[in-house]
Length: 176
Image (cartoon, rainbow, N blue to C red; front, side, top):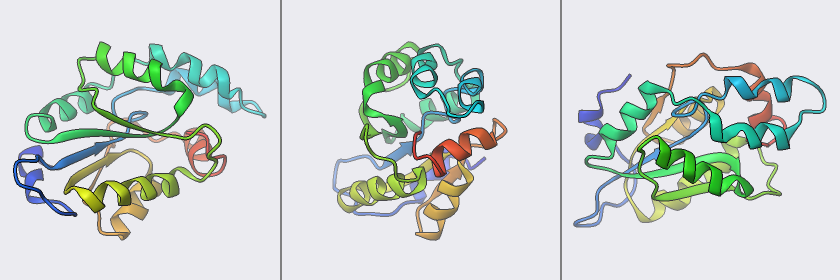
């Protein structure tokens, strides 16, 4: 894992006086353990409503929670998740319950079925056009690869083994 103390040296985008750099953080697989919900996606077709309805009881991932708390000391935390907009209230409640900053939360529009990596790339470009992005934290190898290729400073959240079921959901079905 990268040293959070050095992350202020990284970054893409304009830095405006008095504004802290951005730390752009994914939710699922970074701070939220989704393994208990994957059973809803293993059958075909996946039960997406049940998958998202169970998100409010995700166990926290200690490594990710600690990293975000560290970053929040000198970065503005922006959440960038492939979760659908309809799960906003539950996601915000969950973040608050973990003692995490609940600032800007960028979520996939309910009808958006682009692969997760494409959705996140688009949102990151919008963020980076107005603010300096010091670090992006994501667990999805496809997202990490694409964003690194674009020149973003990405930290791969590798404290939870990446689940192929989730990869299919994020990149093939455009659901999370």
